[in-house]
Image 1 (spheres, rainbow, N blue to C red):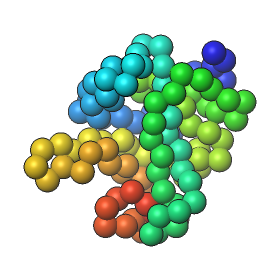
Image 2 (image 1 turned 90 degrees about the vertical axis):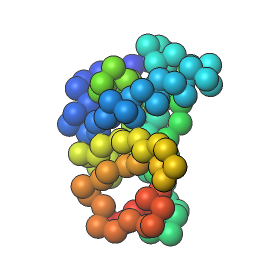
Image 3 (image 1 turned 135 degrees about the vertical axis):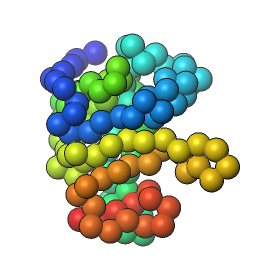
Length: 120
């Protein structure tokens, strides 16, 4: 496993305590370890607002990935997604009206109703 760069993740994305706890729980359920593996966060074309978020677990990095740390979670962001995600906070909302993981992105000019896509 190759770590491109491990720096303070606050400059790109941050994870709230509630989201961190949920990430750790889900990683364990999926056979990943938050100590050794990563949360991959990215942006793809698509969704009703033009761009959509990607969030998944991974245990490998690529040449175009940057690795950051926030709130005891290692996060991978590919180079093309870095500008779109700068300053974003990953939150989690559970309960009856909860949506799951929520991206609070200060760069987004418009988001869809479900919060899974955005435009700049």
